[in-house]
Length: 154
Figure 1 (cartoon, one colour):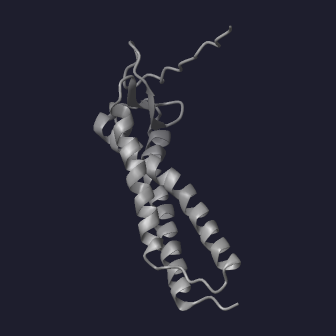
Figure 2: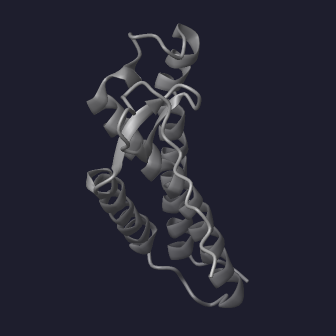
Figure 3: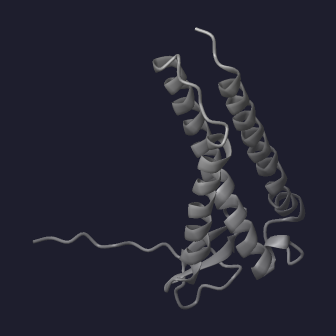
């Protein structure tokens, strides 16, 4: 079966979006490289700045989940073309669907640290900023506190 010109344009847009996400993931790794080169506990790290750490966390969360979503979206799009070989995919969906997913991810990534009990902080063990429980005694440069929920027995 011949793939329509519109579907070809759809896949070109989708591959461009996937490439942009991949390049962005590479660029976001620069602060991690800085932390590994300068030392994980160096006071000169970009991650030691709370606003940078929070922004980096949001960007990283959107990119890592967005990358997984893009691969799934590509696979589903290919499946639609294989099953319905006369169907052409609308060009708009190559931008609208990923953009909608990013908006939802941004909403969650921005709102979660503001909810009670969570903060974004630098974790030297993971060499990245991550969300952690906001427990007394946990500072911006200390390892995140792990919460263990006891098993409930009847």
